[in-house]
Image (cartoon, rainbow, N blue to C red):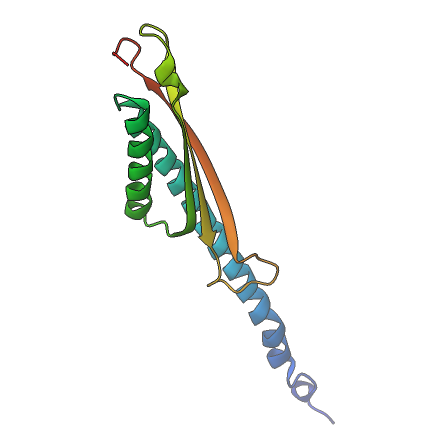
Amino acid sequence: MRSIGRDQRGSATLELVIVIPATLLILSAIIMAGRLALAHQAIQAVAYDAARAASVARDRTTASSDAARVAGFSLASNGLSCTHTNTDVDTSGFTAAVGQAAAVSVAVTCVVGLGDLSLPGIPGTVTLEADAISPIDTYRER
């Protein structure tokens, strides 16, 4: 008479061989999604900071340089490491007459590297973009 336990030998090993890679793939996907969500939140904060810095400047040239400077500082303070960064500042609001509503808009682009996550089908970099608008004081001299 054969024992039932002998027929099941090796099935636990086979289950582990199937389950462990699938679990690691799911865990890596969750980590990647979390990193991308945090990076998108950080890039949005950078765009808001840069737009605010540009809106309090006195002229178009200063606004552009302040926005770029603040964007770089804010990227570093948010712990976001970009392989490539671009900050576009629209300062056309500075040409509006005093008493008219005007705003400054800033678009920040950041290329984030995902090379440390080795997931099949995932690109090595992801481009994140964010934009923000900040009003210029209506009755301030421009």
